[in-house]
Length: 154
Image (cartoon, rainbow, N blue to C red; front, side, top):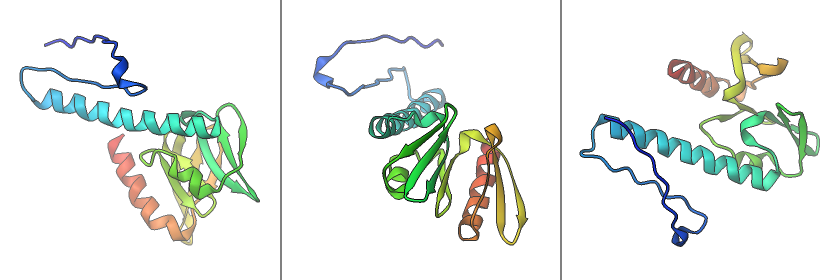
């Protein structure tokens, strides 16, 4: 009923990591383990690509916003300027955690504290570390649906 882990060195894999799950049968427990490993690997690959390209740890990013000609990443450690278009930055982020809330802002759901309608179809988004942002009306409906799904998972 236990789980055993072991490391096997295989230079034929290069930089890749291969995970093999061995069990008597493919039951619910095995399916859940495979699902968790699969989700975690996608997040890990996305995070590594982002940090290699922009030299910022994506798990510490709270908010990414277009600030004039530049893109600013607000992180736990401070603010970083990214000299790339917001659309290209968004492509390298994990869509399970990073959500565009307006033409100029992307938030990390890991740092979302709460959200509330403020009127006129706009949603106020409160993040950790005192960051407050607002959705645009254009994105409000899909963000509201996504927040409800996200809340149900928690």
